[in-house]
Image (cartoon, rainbow, N blue to C red):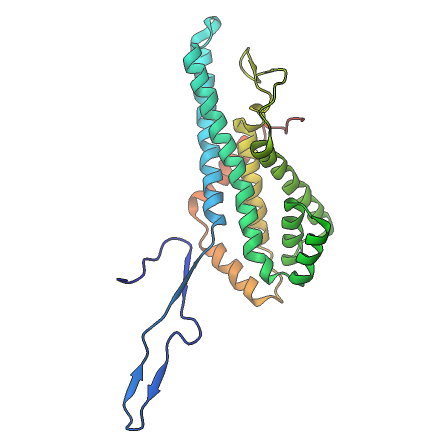
Amino acid sequence: MGGIFITQGMQLRIPQGGLTLRIHDQGAPEMSPLRMEVALEIWPFWLDIAVEQAERAIGVRDELTAAAEAAGEAGIEGEQQADLLVREFKAGVISIAAVAFALDNLQAVLLPHAPRNEELTAKWATNHTSRHQRISETLRRTFKVSNSGGKQLRLAIQEIFKFRDWAVHQPAGFREPVSHDYLDTGVESHSLPFRETNAARIAERGASMISQCIDAPRTSNQWLVEWCERNRSHSPPRWERAKALLSEQSTKAEAPST
């Protein structure tokens, strides 16, 4: 193997015993072959995908708005309208699912370092605890979160996974169409939750939630302090820019009822 290529977010270390030095009886040194290990956390990539796809959904909705205004009373040509609606849906559903995946992987990274994690995982297995509850409890135990902040955290993650479950577990059953929020036409009821404003709001919420956690480690946990510092200093600039854009866009949205 011709060396190791280090990509964004990858960590490298020499494990215990990965490099040894012996001195022979005659005084000659002998060094063992160097052995290294690498690790990669996936949640930052999922968060990037969520933000990028939310921006794409916003762009498609802008195209849809412009096309409708240009068409006037005649309405958008059917093929163009179908293309825009599908593109917005695809970007929105990818964005929202990616936020859930980011939180899921973040929990997997943090759980081994959470207080009494073995006791916690045993309790979850016994009670068949849902994914959103496991994630919120891990974050609450790992970071400095107030009682009111913990409640808000739990509700926010619960909502994100509600959208995620709509995307993953929704059967393709027949139901009454609903009126599109912008066009004078009926659409399938579960396409509207993945519109651009909901994608923007959820992507912004996920990014903000993770960012606030990273800024509030429990100082008694040295591993966590170092982990937060590493992730704080390596946050991609586009993440911060996108959070500001999505925060402005997200004020337009309200979660749809089931």
